[in-house]
Image (tube, rainbow, N blue to C red; front, side, top):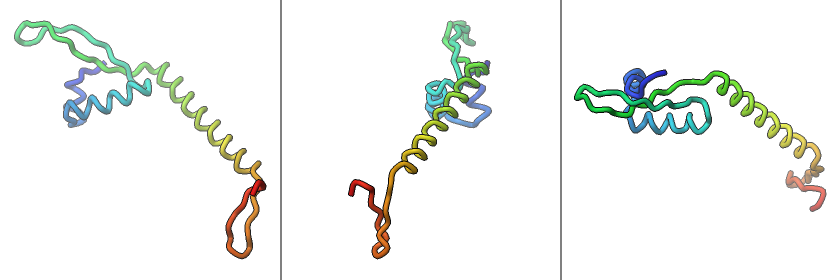
Amino acid sequence: CMKEDDICELLKFERKMLRARISTLRGDKFIQVRLRMETGPDGKAQKVNYYFINYKTFVNVVKYKLDMMRKRMETEERDATSRASFKCPGCLKTFTDLE
């Protein structure tokens, strides 16, 4: 787990920019957050975000995304090959079988 402040220091990001990037990664399920209560230097309790990677979930998400990309490419390839098209030798315009 890494604190939000530590990540800001390591990446040299502003907090607002870091939170925008982290929200994207959280939405894609690449990282997860754990909220903990800690006492600050003034003695008050404050909420601190800790971010971590759950590797089992990460691997499943990557496999899922790769599978979806593969299916999309296969569908596009199948649609492109199954669609009959004709090319005019004069103007080089292509026409489908319905035109």
